[in-house]
Image (cartoon, rainbow, N blue to C red):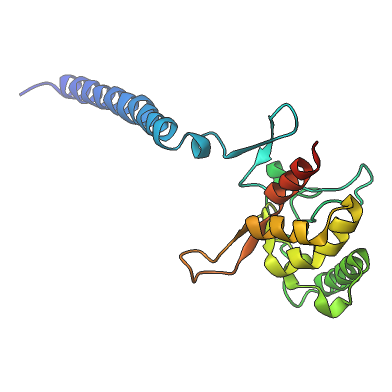
Length: 206
């Protein structure tokens, strides 16, 4: 019968070998395999779904993340479609993703929604009754890149006037960047704000 110290040494050696094997398999081989498959089969998604724009075709964002379209003072720019409000940091801060954590009966949230509704209505020159829900409420992540088709249509006239473009042309761009419900019935039609604004900038390039 082996001595207890020998059994302990043998058990330790087995445990170390298993740790080394699984470290190589799960810590090196598996990540490399998954990364390789992603780069070969889905390179755009695997690299963060980057969006490119501008004359130098540089990366200007990600298709997965919304952005603010405002000036240095935080005021919304009239020539761009505006996203829904964001509770992520100071707005669309990918390092601080999250919601406001304010419940539906929160007086603070009720007041905030009222203020936002008045601001959106005035900014777009429409009555408050036309302001859709997503124009005044933040998403759970604070980084949602999409708005409802209703909110996009609400902004068409203002954007067209600010850019000096025919309203019909702006409407065509909105339609081009509108996605239907997932699988045809889950959710609602939505408009990708960042992609739409990039398309607007490209439309104005000579």
